[in-house]
Amino acid sequence: MERPSENSPGSDISGALAGWSYQPGEVNVRLIRGDDGRRKIQLRLDLGLLQMETSGRPDGKRPHNAASELDYQLRRKRAFERKHKSADQFQISHADVRALREESAMYYHRYVSFFVLGNYKAVIRDTQHNMDILNLCHSSARSPHDRQSLENHRAHVLMMQGRARACAALRQGHMGSAIAFLRGALKQIEQSISRDSHHPGNIKFSPEARVLVHLIQDIKRQLPTDPREELQLLLTKAVQNENFEEAAALRDQIMAMETTCSISRPAEPVKPARRHHDHTRRPSDAHPPQPPQAEE
Image 1 (cartoon, rainbow, N blue to C red):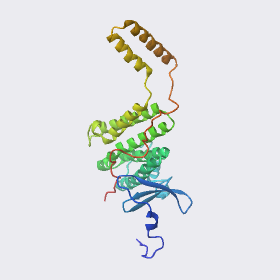
Image 2 (cartoon, rainbow, N blue to C red; image 1 turned 90 degrees about the vertical axis):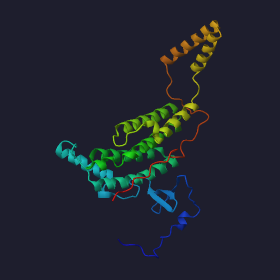
Image 3 (cartoon, rainbow, N blue to C red; image 1 turned 180 degrees about the vertical axis):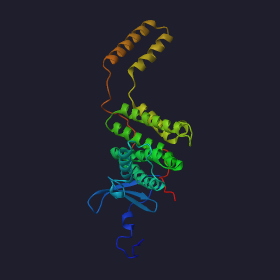
Image 4 (tube, rainbow, N blue to C red; image 1 turned 120 degrees about the vertical axis):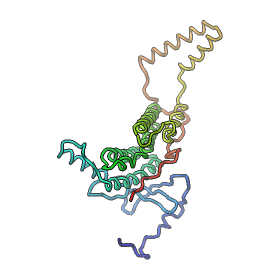
């Protein structure tokens, strides 16, 4: 492998790091305009930085003249299926799994960066890429070890995708949809835990699940109070105080409101509640798993 000489121009990255100090415990990320005119993501690390393309493969490469290693392997799978009328016997080697693992690490760094930047559409795109890698390895890797090698990252990918969908919904003021996306991600994490015979566990002990539960609770606290609930509390107090005339009147109001809602139930609130916490800056309240490392 040819190494650049000590005096190669542009080798020293001190200028790129000047004025951008590393902050431990935070995702230090920024968008820049590259020399080629395209926008790029820079992720600050303790000893340097990562630079990634905003679309396509983060390193800008096209393995096997394909958009990504995943795209290449999926093309192989489709060709196998056309030839054999089924993809059930399609397999990928240990070297293939290693290449996919290395690619998933790149997409991991990028989707975390995009989350901090608030580009939730890109987070959904990149987490789906890694989800497709997980599914391909799980279904088609030749060895049992390789089939399980990335499964411990599934919960984190599901959590980040669910949060991105929820944050995008909150940005539009759709709080009910945001809760639905978070609950959907919770359900998927629960299903992945229940079917993982190599790492059996309980969703209660999943840090990713706890993050989603806390977000659901936070959003619920911002929802406007249901007036029927307030009337129900007043009704309970009226009955306890034996104020039956007031209780009857309150009961009639509750029944009238329920009838009206059953005829025409409003969809999503158009505007978010006045107080709206920012769920967009920290990629996880729990430490995410380390990005997949290649095995020798």
